[in-house]
Length: 161
Image 1 (tube, one colour):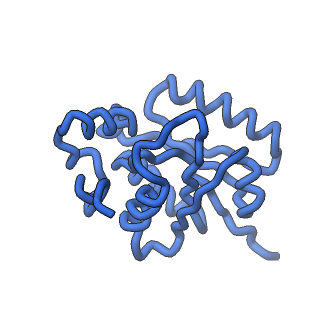
Image 2 (spheres, one colour):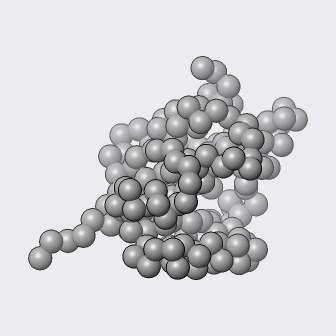
Image 3 (cartoon, helix red, strand yellow):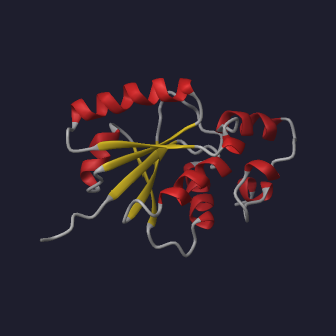
C-alpha cells in the first residue's frame, strides 16, 4: 500500500513574514511531508514588499529545511492546491475573529474541492497580537522590528536588494 504524501499549502501575503508565520510553519513540520508556503498575489492589496523580497526572506528563514518550498500563485487557492498535489491547507489562528473568517474560507474551499482539508494551528500566546499589518506600521514609523521578525532576519534584509 502506497502512503499518500501529506502536502500542505500555507497560503498568505506574508508582507512581511513574521515570527508568528514562522512558528506556525515550524510547529507544523511534524504533521506534513512537505509544506509549500504560497505567496498569494492578491490584486485587492498593494504590496509593501516585492514578491521577490518575500520569497528571499522566507527562503532565508527556512534555508536547509528540505520539507519547505516557497511558491507564488494567483487565482483560487484550491486550484493552486490541485496543481501542486496539496491535500491540506494550513492556517494559523490568533483570535476568535480569525477563526470565524478562516472557518468560512475553509468551508468554501471544501465545497470547491472536497479532497482538501483545512488544518488550523493556534498561534503561540506571545504571537497572538502580531500581524503583518502591525509590522508594516512599525516599519513606517521606524520602530524596533527585532521582536517581530524571525531570527536571522534583520530590518535591513527587508529593504536591501
